[in-house]
Length: 206
Image (cartoon, rainbow, N blue to C red):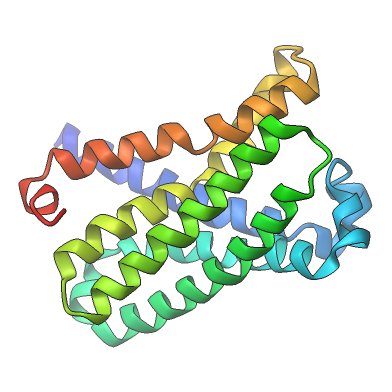
């Protein structure tokens, strides 16, 4: 009973984090970019297509994550799962390309630039392999690569946890931002690899 209760709490927290962060990410639509994203607002004027593709569409991918992991929806409503999967892939493609360009043109230094650029490249690659595997009918391989893709999508959540924590600890922003460019996604991917390795049906699919 205790285990099932903890599982329910975990699921609720996961849904709240994904949907909550996705909604908060669109705050610029109400209050404007300069007020809500002052550290990256320069991208909006210098490269608006890449900027708005990233900040506008990445939240869609994040909001779709809990729906795509919802076993009941996946098993009983497979056409809906496929439709949402296509929407997820489109959001990742456009926001990932936008994020890659923003990473390569950031003024935050080479450490932050390389961290976010590699995140964007891996996000695009894992999603593409996952979708290709589904299209070829290899569902086990599809699950493995989508676990990795989702782990990278969740960098949006961990980023927003680490940023305020770094401020509370009094870290210099530039130093913290460069570290978070890596810390927001590398541990996520390591957890994904652990989850894949501990399930024989998934690890065999590699």
